[in-house]
Image (cartoon, rainbow, N blue to C red; front, side, top):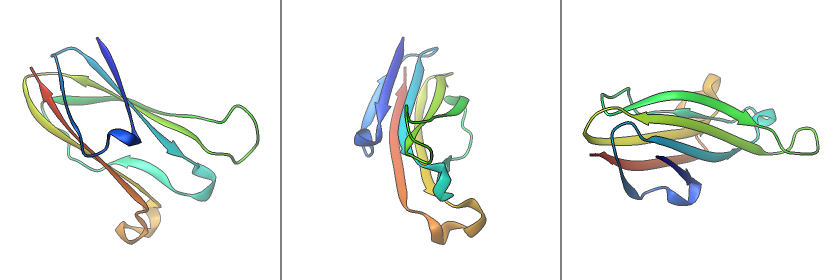
Length: 105
């Protein structure tokens, strides 16, 4: 089974089964230097499979979507934490945060 979540789901909790795929879509405009990054440490319950940017359908420099794909590995609870920042400027540059609690059954 594959589940999809967006920025509107920040702060929520959801339940998935082991083997399920979780797709997280967050708005991003990398031309500004701000990019989403996984902040939470690797854990045994969720594994990051990919992180890809989907550009806008038209216009150069427009906002698109950063799509993170995770796979539920084993039962337990994981907290996904992400931040939108300029990596070279450090934590003081954080614009937005995303957090989701995922229970794997």
